[in-house]
Image 1: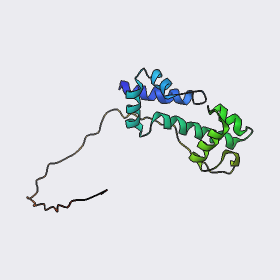
Image 2 (image 1 turned 120 degrees about the vertical axis):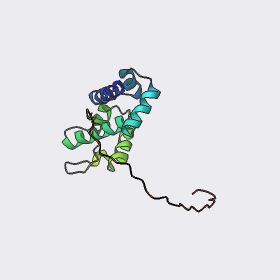
Image 3 (image 1 turned 180 degrees about the horizontal axis):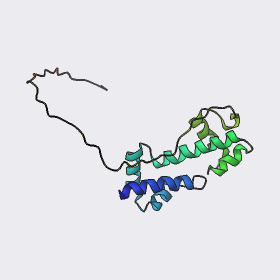
Amino acid sequence: MNRLNDLISAINYIELNVTTDVTVQSVCQNAYSSPYHFQRIFGIAFGVTIGEYIRNRKLTLAGVDLLKGNVTVTEIAFKYGYETVESFSRAFKKFHNILPSKVKSGSKLNFYEKINVNINKGSKIMNYSVEEHAKKVLVGYKKRFHGVP
């Protein structure tokens, strides 16, 4: 349960600091864990690396900010920690399939949601039965593959 709380606090830390220079190292330090083990646990639990999660959340929120308008692409790029507008534009295009300068109020963008962790306390009673079946003969066929199967 302690690891689960660490994962939840890591998600909350990322969400609170997404516009700052949040890194994998800072997330692991916040969870009081070694980067190797925490990244492994994060990946197993959520199916995505910490770096991918941070990047996807930043690009999602950048898209929302651009849809709202009244800000330039340069301001958004620096707000979400990109060093150059070109690197932001490249990442934005790869994630949303549209250049940030082409985003208008009617544009369709990809949205990567915040990870939510639900804990179900207790368990349900499971009805089961053990059945015996008649003996069966299984037949196989052996064949060698060469190259990539």
